[in-house]
Image 1 (cartoon, rainbow, N blue to C red):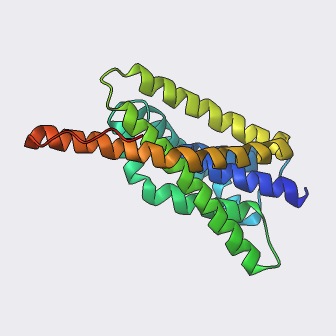
Image 2: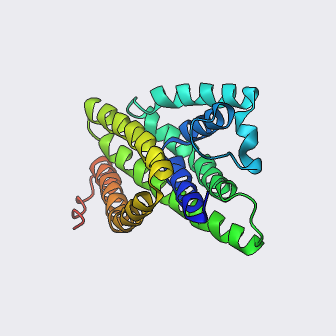
Length: 208
């Protein structure tokens, strides 16, 4: 399999890890054990197909599937996994490239992969935090199911059509760069409004 395909898979794993890390680990483990894709699991990732690791990632996937659909708990889960998803995404991106002759190339892939994971994680976490300001649970549930489908579809596309996936990944990164500051400015505004309401201070201006 050529380097372009490996690069698409590395990008796909980094991107998906910021949304559903345990789904990524579980799918990779199943792939290595039952050869679900036309892609051989690199030696550095073969441990994911071990029965004990598969059982662990399967249980964590089960917990994450339900935790992510409960308003409030989803944001707590995201906050905790800030310290898990980002380094895991970087390591998966490096591992997906297989054995590289250049250590510098492996470091570059890891840094870019970790950055992509961080971007998707903070975009997801910020969006869900905004949704949690609404008392109804339907929007959270819809967002969570959409994320489930996006991760499965995105990983499939990375394996099936790497060129298309890489083009979509570039578009996603550009969109993420544009939207992420807006999301977090809006979260800051909501927090400041709550503080102003409690303290009796003037309400802050809504960000543009």
